[in-house]
Image (cartoon, rainbow, N blue to C red; front, side, top):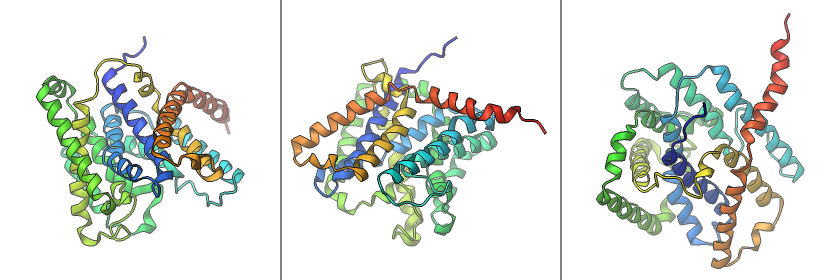
Length: 326
């Protein structure tokens, strides 16, 4: 019997993966377009926290071997695919499975979040404990940053928050038009503040990708992070109040975000580092057409059943090993 899809969360995933891909592709135009900088910063306030939140909501305890197949295998596979691609375009880069390329940190982070949930999911007060640990990890020296540990620990509270999410209560609130209007107003205010102060906002701080010392925050880094975690959590709910609950023409994208996430990174890195094709965008109109093209790319990638192909490849490579006996 096929599982019933949740249109609300598929729509939310669809919205978020569009944000992820657009933000990455806009990175190429930070020096040329002010709006590219503003949009990326605004998106980074919520897109990863919201994805982690949704992953937490659907998290159920699974055997580690299943998680290895679903997450560790794709991580290792795409680490080598990235390495080959970098070599082919002449981009010099080191290789270590401990240091993920580009977007792959999120895949291995999902593995650690799921394992941690298996072990500690029933611990009382896990959410406040995870927040305290997220605040403390920023004091860790950078030589311990294996697998993007700063981001893994910093975003874990959103995973727990999502797991404790009461959808029924939220949907009752969502029916209130006043709450939707208030959500729009608050999000507009945040966007205007980002527009005014974007030059003072460090994207690495939003992404929690280093310790406080390297981010230039010093001993007050924990305060910055606590405020940022609160803003990001609030924006998850604010956007949630605006996400459609019924299927639409983009719902299908949210059903296959893994393919989009893994493949778009390769495409972006190839185009930005190995070609000058993206440099043809040199006007506001060109940037608009560029974003429309990115959205088209997302829709195409969402049609590729990459997960099914990786499962078959895993079975082809790993099952014979399982059959080997001493």
